[in-house]
Length: 439
Ligand SMILES: Nc1nc2c(ncn2[C@@H]2O[C@H](COP(=O)(O)OP(=O)(O)OP(=O)(O)O)[C@@H](O)[C@H]2O)c(=O)[nH]1
Ligand SMILES: [Mg+2]
Image (cartoon, rainbow, N blue to C red; front, side):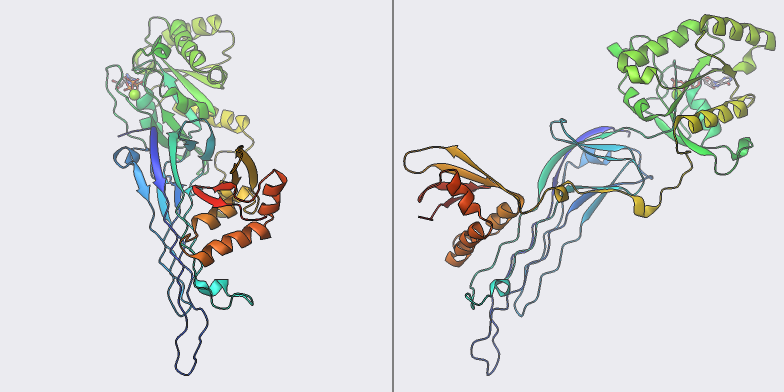
């Protein structure tokens, strides 16, 4: 089943808790702290995979979870990290936030990855907190919860060439003649219900082995498709990424000029940019008419459409004219981008989107939320400080003391004071409230 829009929830793995333990060895009366660090929780990545062409797997499963990291152990042993969960998606998958307002990522090359949910950091064991002033810490951190995120995924197929036209003009027949795609072909309208991708190789048509491109056969359009007629225009979004369009017209049609106009009007109604894409116009099924009639139809068509400089003519049945069409497509492709379509992308040039790395983990913001006579409410937001707080065991006084230390070290206390915080005020960090204890 083809599917090009889904909403999915991703829950990354929690970090393992840090461990509190002390060395117990024979003849060593007071061994030091030896609690190890918890392992990292698994992150969730989406990875563009050329062998997949639909988001249908996300129709049946809506929530994905990665595993949690192992807790730390005594004798300074760290827990192991949980494996990342890598979910293959089709090339051309676009990732939005839940409300579809912010574009988060766009996977356009095979192997490219997007981090949808970051695994939690493992908690430090008590061994980590040993210092000259704190020789026997009895606290450890909890593991950080994994990031949770709901994303809307949308697929826009990334084909070089889109084949468009009215129903039954032979779009599917053409792609099956020139590529490895084998869509359903039949002599009734709307045979094709979803787009089909095919890799066109020009070698059988006298081209070189390097000359190949991706083509996309789209469901037929009819007049008022943009108002929902026929299969509607929901698939036209896939055309947005085509570099070139091949516009097919059945040579037996009553009025090729009108057919051409109808399709172009639908493109324009959907998105003006689509109507401006370079188009090659071609008559199909020329095996069904004689040469003179073809010439006459072509002349009439060109006269009525001055903007069309050349009209191609071919037959999927006899193969006549296909070579010429393909070479023209290739030439146009070369002209429409700097890169020829056969450039192979090296694996190390793949982008990995990690939006969180762009923010400085140590930066934070302080704000006055509610001014009250006795205890005003402030907030501190920032990746690192929120992480420390969420990983703290607030039932352990030593753990709490460490949070206050961090407030001083990162000058959060001073910044809060500068905006009016006083002894006894409340400070919200994530979901945790901390009392401002400085006089
Ligand atoms: N004689 C002849 N018939 C053709 C040619 N190309 C396609 N056909 C026939 O035209 C009919 C429609 O072909 P399809 O490829 O299914 O048309 P389509 O444009 O994909 O149609 P939709 O998917 O419904 O939009 C089929 O019966 C094909 O066999 C051709 O070059 N010559
Ligand atoms: Mg079809």
